[in-house]
Length: 291
Ligand SMILES: CC(C)(COP(=O)(O)OP(=O)(O)OC[C@H]1O[C@@H](n2cnc3c(N)ncnc32)[C@H](O)[C@@H]1OP(=O)(O)O)[C@@H](O)C(=O)NCCC(=O)NCCSC(=O)c1cc(O)c2ccccc2c1O
Image (tube, rainbow, N blue to C red; front, top):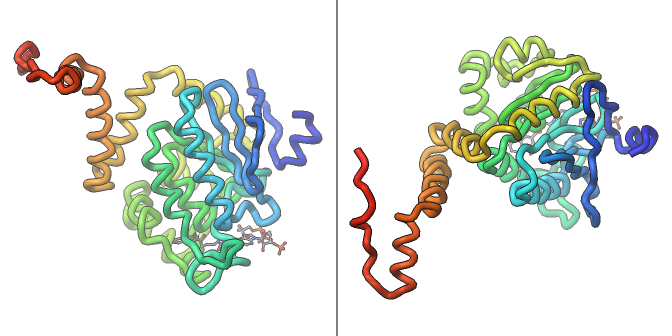
């Protein structure tokens, strides 16, 4: 993409060693987001810089579709979520189309569909990295929190606004926040609606690292490349393991699903399938009872 086009799409310039060349898959139909791929990395960008990348129901629908795409694509190992431009990662729900029961879509139906997106990001079995420049506020702050890792530019600012604008996220927004920064700090974030700069966010464990804005993408790519060199199964099971404790039976289901998938690859698992198809009794006696 030329520099002019890159600016038009609201993307920041890349600095640092071996930048990637992002490609947009043909037939791209999204209006509110960008979906790009390079190497084994998918980059999903909320592209509404005129409203600090606030999301509307359509934005969330497109994000869900894009994450599904990255989830199912075997060429993708790691996913980046970011916002267009340097001013904001995401400013939460678009207050201009907030109705009395949620955020209005084109048909007039009101949604809180970002909650579905939150669950999707948590459960999809690949690392998701939030690449944050500028504001991550309100529902946008919860989105970065949900991501597995957060790389913040030095201009990033974080905070909740719910009690000021008549909203709250008592699910992951409260519970995961408390587990991430501690209960007292989480209550401060929600009860006072302050903003925190990138260094404050780092010191409370809300982000993994802070880098100069001009290096944000190259550092993020470097982290993604490092993860892509590691065992995808180990990363997958670890992600499910971190969720298992917080997510109750749904978390155990996710972790156990990995055990089942691994069991399917064994001769013991396959003996049960083969015996059924061959209309005979299974012979599990040949498999060891390990200590
Ligand atoms: C993000 C800001 C701190 C940025 O401040 P700054 O001074 O840089 O920029 P402006 O304020 O001038 O904004 C520029 C431009 O963008 C418009 N804009 C910004 N944010 C939004 C927004 N969220 N919705 C609509 N429009 C927005 C702004 O009006 C300006 O437009 P002009 O036409 O006037 O130029 C600051 O903008 C800010 O504080 N924004 C609001 C942050 C906020 O309160 N977000 C909503 C929180 S509630 C929420 O996100 C939420 C969503 C859900 O779906 C939930 C679901 C379930 C439970 C809870 C949910 C929830 O809490």
